[in-house]
Image 1 (cartoon, rainbow, N blue to C red):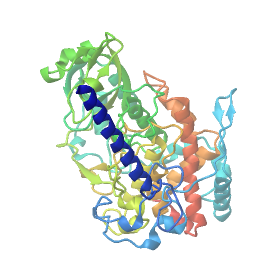
Image 2 (cartoon, rainbow, N blue to C red):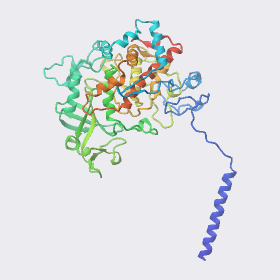
Image 3 (cartoon, rainbow, N blue to C red):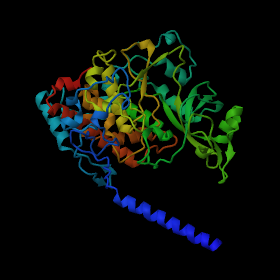
Image 4 (cartoon, one colour):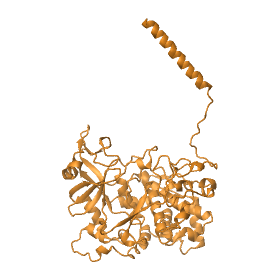
Length: 517
């Protein structure tokens, strides 16, 4: 009886499978189109050098982009970059391939469009665009010429009468914050502060609240404080191609590199940041509260690990481990407390959607800048040019995570942006994320001093890679960046200049593109 049941069951199963196969073959074949970038009117051309998929124009509604004051429900289809023939991700340039010179370890970048731009500007007004003279001037001298104007602003009112023969370096740093920059590059206390964060004994540790990843508030023996970000990746670890920018780990070396890059570019808007190796048992666990201390454990490799507590990546599978108990990290000095230097947080108009499915308004339409320029605080003063400076700075890092920025309330709207939280930079050395430059190619504006710095770094003989390498060399855990990341800085200088070339070639008046303010 059992044998007959097996035969019957097998026959029924075979008949069912054959029926399913027959039905599938009878159905019409449906071709699934891939998300290929096209120049048609239906799809938008983002170009080959950006990570964004095409957006279908007719489906762009309130559920497809992040809505805010700068994201109206309707847009002019004539302002969509895909219809204009110029890709949303910025221009796609023809920078010549890298040429390596082993004897000098130098990479030679040249570009015919940038050469043409500089010649054209010099022929129109050699007084302000004298690139022959610029080539003979040292980059250091050029930066000093612009840094002389830093002290032409007011200081924090709380420090006007703050004096003392024995002020610590972090107190001197706080006292030196003023309206035009976070610090004066000629102030020797800044280098002293970097040394202090490297050498001063740690006397207290606590977890910082908020955020997606673990950060610790470190107090030193001189009562200075710094934000500690631990090492998660080795220097040569590149962000995986399929990872979104908002799921990437923060890099401790990116925070250090951002401070030095910001200083090399003459912005002075990143708090002094230094690298240091700590003993996880003595410097952290010994001083930690019970909540943090109980997250410490020994790994199977016999290394000391801990994970702390935070929103996302604070569990055993995302633990931070020493070797066996020594750990690198970045230390970014704290700004003065809110009661002394209250800060205002601003939403970046070019903020990304932080969604796997939706796009921000500016990623689909090209008219955002015109709307931004009509609204305070971007309709007058320096704010829009500072925002463009910030995006150039982020482009050099490859940082796509600039959703907000801060200013110091004491200085009103006529002040600089703080370039804080740069941990998601320097993840891809061979990819240049052109969408970060959206404010440049949508506004077609750049500050004259910023343009001149980039032009100098293009004509040489100094390059952004060599200047940044030299600055980074003073850090105690140097080298901070790998050579491919340093060479990428030179390549990105050209790409910024090519955006300016395109704006001027499109017929924009030079004095409206390169603005002396």
